[in-house]
Structures are given as structure tokens and as C-alpha cells.
Image 1 (cartoon, rainbow, N blue to C red):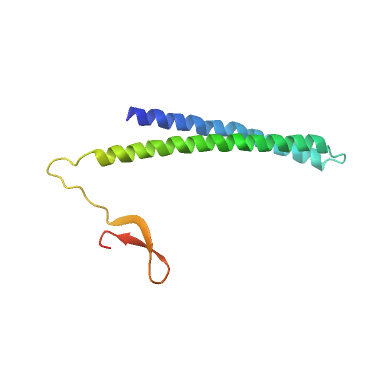
Image 2: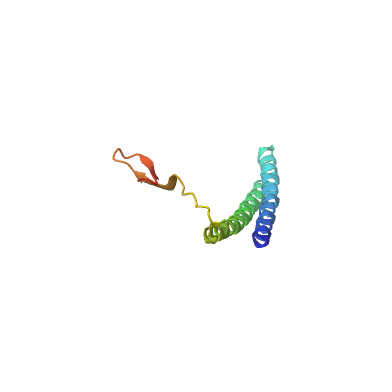
Length: 117
């Protein structure tokens, strides 16, 4: 449990890292807008701001992907440890009424498979 908590804290840290490039993106976008809307538009400054926006977007996307990877690892570990745990003696484990995978019915629409078929 503590390992999962550490991984989740790691993921939260990575998500926090996304805020910095997003703030930079907004700042550069506003600067580019000002440079382009003035009477003497400074195209070079606007171009540089747009390049910084693209770089910050890449940085934010990479941080988000890292966060997603960590969160998926935690969920997989929880699923694995939950399925490995055996039910307590005298208690039967309830099976779910609906299985998540879907099937396509004769009418071509997706329908959920039930435990009964």
C-alpha cells in the first residue's frame, strides 16, 4: 500500500510539472497576440513566441504521458494484488453481473456481455 502511495505521489508531482509549461504557453500566446495586433507587427518576436509555445506544449505532453504511465502502473498493481488476495474463509466471492467487454449484436449495435451470455 505504501508503494502505491509513493507512486501516486510521484504521479501527482509529474502532473504538477504540467502546470509550468501550460503557464508559459499562455504567456507566450498572449505576447504573440500583442506583437501581431500592433500597428507595427513584430513578426520575428511573434514567431519566436510561437516556437516557445510549441516547445512548452511538447514539455507538457511529455509530463502528462509520464503521469499517465505512473497512474496506470499503480492501477495494474492494485488489480494484481486484489486478484491475488483470496476470499476470507466462509465467504464466497461475488461475481460481477456484467462483464466489461462488449459484443456486437445482430443489429450491429454494441451490447454488453452478461455473465449469462
